[in-house]
Image (cartoon, rainbow, N blue to C red):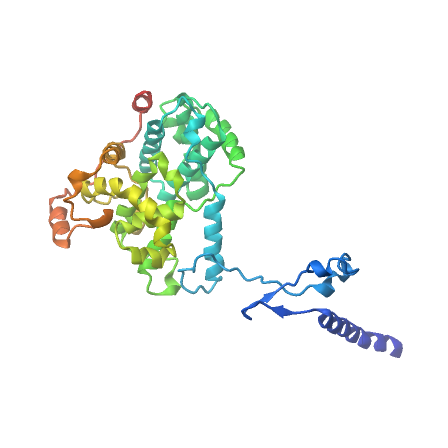
Length: 403
């Protein structure tokens, strides 16, 4: 019994001795700035060392590597109690980079034109409004569609509606708490797409996307930027504190720009930051996005015609949706005459904009109207909420696709 006790007492001592020996064998060094530990790896002069090729003895020649994430951009997020703000920000940036899109995707489809993509996305926005889907749902569908089309070749225009409604069906199941049923999505196609067609296409789309269904969309970036800009208490980071009307106006500019296939040249984070710039300033954009002027300058200039069109159209009143709480209204995807605005923006792009040189907006910055002007405009707006179409007919969509 005494021998067993002696063995039991010596076991912890033996483990402790092994730990001390292991620590003594480690060679710990600091980085040149003496701020973070690094793992030392055998250099060229130690490659021939007999211990270097032995896995068990390799521990003798290694110490701790820098395991701390160093973000490319300084994280603009406030201090978080549930995670490191640098890790969260870096993960968002990495996700934005990992979901690549191809601006030349339509070159793989000689039967399609950029206008057809715009018509389809505009129709998806209209479907989203009727079913009261969130903006994030529509933006997910748009991302799925563009990435799926980049993996295909020679898609005919007769298949576009099936692909588009399937992408919206998938996005609704990903984002919505109570997504519409598959028969409801088939219904809005006016029997052009059956339930079986949508379910079959669903598998094809998800396989081609390799089941990567959670990108960092432009609207999610805008939500982050706006929240950081208006945040006064870091504990309320997850609770929206920004003005709904301002968010809706910037989101409308994003929706319009995304109808142009050239939007695929820019990352989603840059698109959201550039849209925010047209309603604010470069300083604010740099503070909330950690992006520099050189990173957003090209996208900002490209957005100028779209911002001019929206400015000429004036402020649009936020729509109310039956059954949606007022505090969540701005998150519901709404529809507007985007195709008309898109044609007008393209006409501006094809001119030298000389006849707009008298515009008081410098450098293409879209400034909101004065408070007095907005008050006068609000008085003239009718109190009635615009009625939503209960159903989109396929003939109208086909008519636009055939043009």
